[in-house]
Every structure is written in C-alpha cells, then in structure tokens.
Image 1 (tube, rainbow, N blue to C red):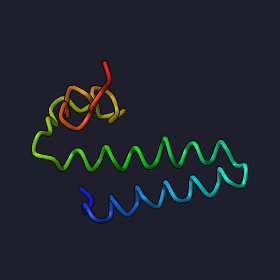
Image 2 (image 1 turned 90 degrees about the horizontal axis):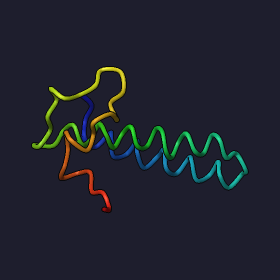
Image 3 (image 1 turned 120 degrees about the vertical axis):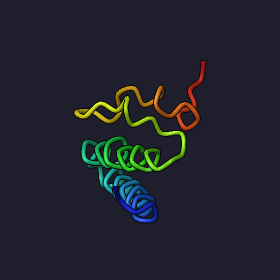
Length: 78
C-alpha cells in the first residue's frame, strides 16, 4: 500500500499533466491522465479509509463495486 501523501501528490500531478496535454491538443492522452491515472490514485486513497470493505474488491478492476465498498466516499446524485 502506498503512502497517502504520495497518492495525493500523484493524483494532483496527473491532473496537472492531463490539463497541460489537453491545452496542447493531446486530448486522448489528457483523458487518460485525468479520467484514468488520477481516478486510480483516488481509488487507492479510498482504500486507506476506515470504511473500506476489501473483501468486496475485484482483483482485476478496482473500480468495480466501488460505491458498495465506500458508500461515504462515493457520493452519487440520484
């Protein structure tokens, strides 16, 4: 498990790099940094919370069942 400070820094860096690439017109790469890598780091951060239910974690796709594992973190509009 990675350090919380590193995960936050990495997520912010992914957002920054993604925005810079979007500004240069590199839309596909920007999408991967923002919607892929940064979101992956946020999922890892959620795994460090007290309400984590790791027994429900999908070993192939960590985003699956995220809302059930972390109901307090995953705020969804009705």
